[in-house]
Amino acid sequence: MPASPSPRSGLRSAAAVQAEIRALLEATGGWLWGPTRARYEALRDEWVAAVRDEITTAA
Image (cartoon, rainbow, N blue to C red; front, side, top):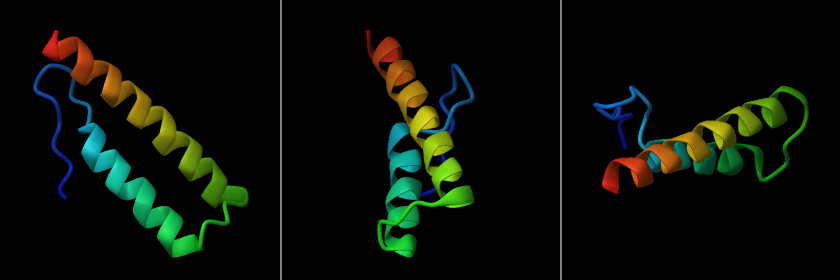
């Protein structure tokens, strides 16, 4: 799924970020160490921001 920015905020959609998180977990077999863990945490924070933006936009 391509990264689709929200017209309001420039954030990628929650679905796009979630797809990247799933791909990361699949590629690592679920083991998150060092830089992989840091990447996961950054993606998680981006996903949270995207969900909040989508909820705010929908309201």
